[in-house]
Amino acid sequence: MQQPISFANPAYKIATKRLVIRCYNPSDAALLCESVQESVEHLKPWMPWAYGEPESLEMKVQRTRSWRAKFDLDQEYVYGIFNIDETKVIGSTGLHPKVGPGGMEIGYWINVNEVRKGYCTEAVLALMKVGFDIIGLSRLEIHCNPKNIASAAVPRKLGFTHEATLRKRKPDENGELQDRMIWSMLKEEYETAVTGSTDIQIYDATGSLIFVEY
Image (tube, rainbow, N blue to C red):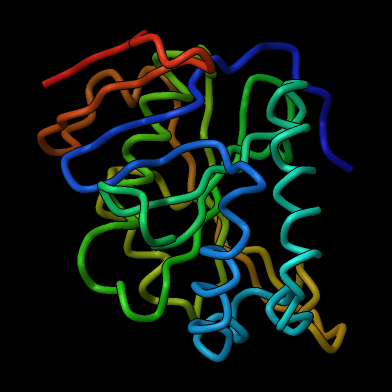
C-alpha cells in the first residue's frame, strides 16, 4: 500500500545535458508504445508489467492520462525520459510513495537501444535534485533485483548505500518471490555526496524556471 504524500512537487519538466525528463501527456502515447514494444523482451526479466504488452495505443493514452492526473494531484510522479528534442521516449522514471513518511522510491527503465549510454544515471541524478532540493525529502530509495546488474550499478555509482537484500520479497510474473536489493540515500548524505557535474534546469507546470544548476 502506498503512503499518502504530504508534500507537493512543482517539477513538471527537467532539462539535463542530453535529456528532457517530464510529466507524460496523452500526446506522448504513440512514442511510449513504440519504445516499450522495442524493449519488451529486454524488460520482461525485471518488469512484470512487460508481460501485459503489447498494449493498444488507446490503452497507452488512458495510462498517460492516469499518470498525468496523479501527477497533478500530487499522488505519484511518473516521468518520461525523452531525447533533447522530445521525438523519442528513451525510457521512464518516477518518484513513488512506497517507502514511508519523508521518502520516495525512484524507479526506472531504459529502451533496449539506449542502454549503456549513461542515460539512466543522468535521469536518476535529476530526480535526486527534485526529491531533495525541490520537494524536500529526507530519504530516497532504489529497489532492484540483485540479478539486474545494470540497474544496481546506478545507485552504486551515485553514492547510495546498499542497506540490505531482502530474500524472496517481490513476486515475479509467475508469482514466484524474488530477492530485492534496497539502496538508500539520506538528505544529509546527498548534501555531501560527490555525484558528478550537473547541468540542469527545472520548470513548473506553467513552463517557468524554478531551479537551475550548472
